[in-house]
Length: 77
Image (tube, rainbow, N blue to C red):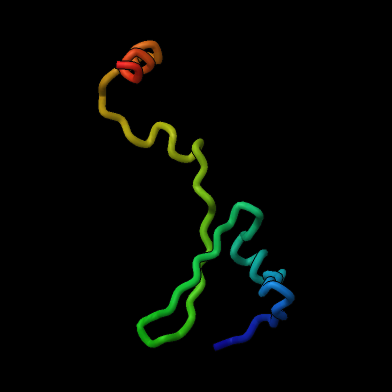
């Protein structure tokens, strides 16, 4: 394993993500860090972006046209 940086654990178990990782993995305020343990018992981390509503709008289409008025009417039935 090649060590790129070291960090310190602060009060309340807080730490900083090293600059090298932030740059290489495009880490910003919208990044979620997933912590895990592999099959050999070693720690694993994964970085992913937070999914926003804009990311999922329009992904699923059922081919049916629906108006907002009709959706509201169905809601109160």
